[in-house]
Image (cartoon, rainbow, N blue to C red; front, side, top):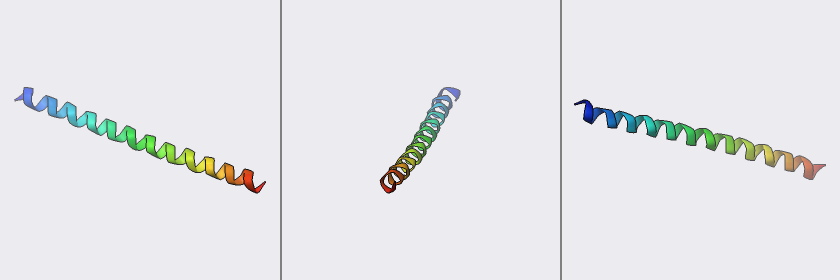
Length: 46
């Protein structure tokens, strides 16, 4: 029984980790992009 359950648990944990990593990466990219656009707008205004 454990031989069937363990790979599924490992796969589930890995998918959760990959999903959370991708989500945090996407959020940081969006934040950096928004801050870049804000700074460029400020430079254009100045």
